[in-house]
Amino acid sequence: MKKSNLAFLLLLVGYNLSIAQHKGNYNQITPDISRQNILTSGNANIYNPTVQHQLNKILNPSNVLTIDAKALQNVSATTYTAIFNLSQIGPSTETTNKLMKQRIDSIKTRLNAIGITKDNVVIDVISFVPVYEVEVTKKLFSKTYTEVPKGFELQQNIHIQFSKTNQFESILEACAKSEVYNLVKVDYYIENIQEVYKNLQNKLLELIEDKKAYYNTLGFDLSKYDIKIADDKYCYFPKDFYQSYQAYNSVSFEALNKDKGVTTAKKQTSYYYQPLTYEHYDVVINPSILEPVVQIGMNIKLLFTPKPKEQKQQPVTKTEIDHKYYVISPNGTIDVKELNTKN
Image 1 (spheres, one colour):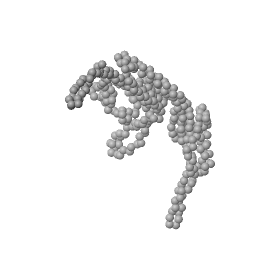
Image 2: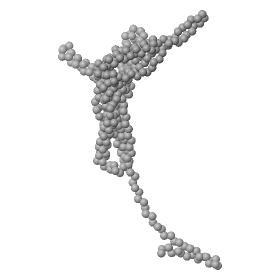
Image 3: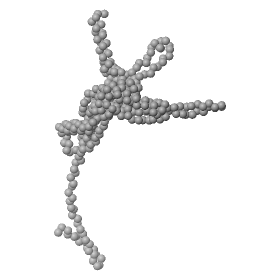
Image 4: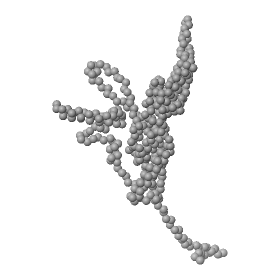
């Protein structure tokens, strides 16, 4: 094979590998992104049925107008708080407490070296309980099992506050060197969240005014419409948007050929951050994100219905009524007279 052809093949393989790297592994198992969506029939792609429905959606004209505006803002946290759980056992209360204090002081010393002072570290005592063991007492014809205290267990949570995400790796290392591995969670905090809501509100007002002008251009006089409104706001943190998947291939042709049983291995579960997508939003502030962020949103919906037409009341006309009266004479005759009501 010529060198030029070999170089072309290597370039083609490298190109395919780069595509696979961008594609990732998670959609091999994820139910909502199955392989049936990327099959082909002839030369035409089989598109996602949901997307296909949106492309062929039939519009139904109406004189009822709706303005549905949604805005989302991605906000980086001002501070973070990592919470670790640590447990310590000892033969006595004094020893147990001393060993726990040594571990925590060691963590504080390492954290101080990376700029996290003791003011940013808080200890939360969870439990301090005795640990029991079963003691067996043998008698002539029986055994007695008795629980007796053998030591104590102290559990504490250590809260570590930091302001930069690149500090978290050093925090993990500082805790691991003191044999603390149980990371409970990481909380995100935002200062002046009201300013974020105010910013979203201003963006929605601008969008609503643009849509009103659009309807006015189309010939709709919104002053002749009754208005109904509904609005909402929300705030989501990264911990709410981690999803899991498993990427593996379990087929073993060698085991089948040898007619031997297959021993299944434990499949590793991977997690990835999947924030809110943007297809349903009209305004997205800070759309490009590199790290997990707090997602704050506002929705507002306006419904315009035509005002009912005023019905003119018909004037009431007086109708003339002929009044008659009867005159009865003493001899019993009746004389009918008309009453003049025009004067």
